[in-house]
Amino acid sequence: MEFKMGERKWVSEADEYVCALSEDTQKIAKDTLGEDKNVRDQALESMRHWITHNPRILNCRLDSNFLLRFLRFSKFSVVQAQIALERYLLLRQSYGMVFREMDIKIPKMTELLQTGFLFVCPKRDKNGRRVYIIRPGAFDLSKYTNADMLKIAGIAFETLIEDEENQVKGFVYLADGQGCGLPYVTLFTPLEMVRLVKNGEKTVPARHIEIHGLNVHPTMKFAYEFGISLISEKIRKRIKLYSTIEEFLAGGTMELDILPKEYGGTTPMSEMIDNWKEELLNENARLLSHDEMAVQEELFSSKERDGAVSALRASGGTCGNEDSMYGVTGNFRKLEVD
Image 1 (spheres, rainbow, N blue to C red):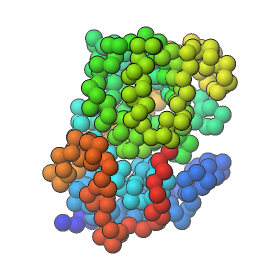
Image 2 (cartoon, helix red, strand yellow):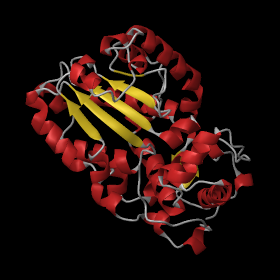
Image 3 (cartoon, rainbow, N blue to C red):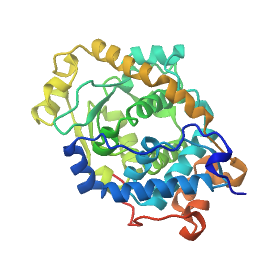
């Protein structure tokens, strides 16, 4: 069965893309992602044709901003962008307890936000990237679940990725292991961890540019080594560990005025969290509209629905079919996900 754009209501309709990126960001997009007007226009057209003729997708956003997050993630390999988008929609639906109702106004989410477990610094670094601060030790294991952890992380990501600057330039992460010990290992089973890491890297359309780890407790070393073994060599090379905050700061990796006062900057963490909350509230309605997106789960295999690694390795369903069936055009370069 084929669907056409005019036959049903989509979460957001197709629009004519107007580039609002600065000249500097456009150059980065061209040099690192192979993006220019011609490539972008063809890719967007192909994505929309494929979505509206794909029986596995019941509802989706068709606006340029949403589709470009997947195209930029895949460096404009249209087929790989389709694979990522289809997996993204499926996982949102299969794991609804995490990925649906991404509402920062939910009391648990508001409370977790205020703990400073995860927030994003208001200023960009010298390369124009937003910086995540992650403090697992602030996560109360007696009060919150692993689903809560994933939901607050999902809310943060979905909020930031709406900004095209972030789609192009990617993110920097600063994870502080202070107060994080062995009990935290039990948050996820080994199987859950494998699926979480693999799906996060292959499906979540984000460019992870730098990852800095502070205060990694010795008892967590084996967990770190297990986690690091799951990610690609490309991402692995972007991870740097520091014994203390002083060691990190001495390296001059990040400008001090980016960081909260508690990490050597000038702005108190509490003020940054309040600013971040405002950002989240501004995008809250859009995030909730994502619950309208849907796929026909019965057209996916059980392994695909479970997020199994074996399903990730496969080219997968409609995404792997020939371009003659789904009108795919564009550059089918080998995927090198940043």
